[in-house]
Length: 424
Image 1 (cartoon, rainbow, N blue to C red):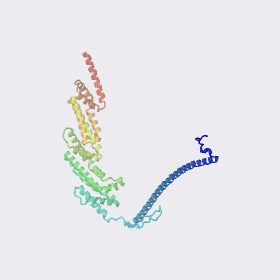
Image 2 (image 1 turned 30 degrees about the vertical axis):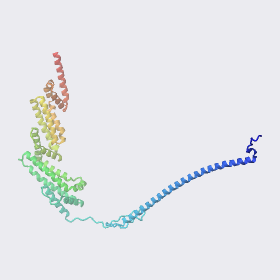
Image 3 (image 1 turned 90 degrees about the vertical axis):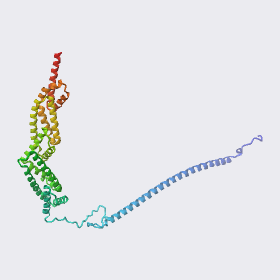
Image 4 (image 1 turned 180 degrees about the vertical axis):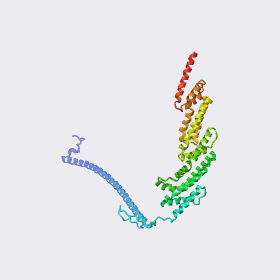
């Protein structure tokens, strides 16, 4: 070989040297791998330790909060027990035991509340019932005679309450006799034979209004009696109902008084129907009186409807001969409006249907044929639309009105058609 050709060093190495080199290389690589795994293991262990520390700190915080809450609860319980103990130690003027046995007792243990020194119901004076009734009697008579009362209404109300609470309410039957005596005395002023009807009605209205005002004041005094004793005894009338019953029985149901009252009312209504001005307030007050006394229908309404029927029957016969159809229809419409106004101002609402039915019957139903034969052809020939509209409106109010109108209109159309045909 030439001098420039160098032989590699490992060529002169023996097998033993090669083995040692390989071993060293493998050890170096193994150590590097071992260090890598060890480093990764250490990092994992550190992460686990950090988690444990965080969990431990959280657990410590939660446990510390629970401990603080339990301490607070124990403190509140102690304070409540102290408050209860202090409250039970307060003095009680009603005689309740000052030391409360509820603190040291077991739950659910029932203890009796002992009340001492309970006062007995106070007794009334011996003559309290008689003296109180005399006081109430004096007040009632003062109200009935429109005089001043010596006692306050509160004092009188308290006296009635005391008598009811001490089972003396039955003594108030004397009040019924006292009121009955006063009502009977009022009837004398209505029995004079020479009294004018209008003056009679005014006196009756004054008596009724005064009686109502008196009963309102007296009921205010005996209100406690109405709410206790009367409610417990259904057979006994209240103060107000008793006053109405006495006025009805002793004044209005008197034959002479009732006759004069009803005749006076009918006279005023007849004057108004004739066009005169009347006192509607007086009519309204007296008719409401009859309604409140529950004798309106039997004492007034039946006679009023008979008078209405008689009036409009005669009026219908007379006006059908004196007026033509348009004027008669206008008069019927006016009468219906007037009766509706009376219902609005003073008549009882229950009278509406029989009253309007009576007017329609006497002014329309009894004259359907006469109205159609006398005026339908002329209304159609002259094309009087307004009068035809009123005719149709009024005929819808009565039975068979439209039927008769259609038949007569049909007859007119046929007659008109034949006339046209004959001309052509």
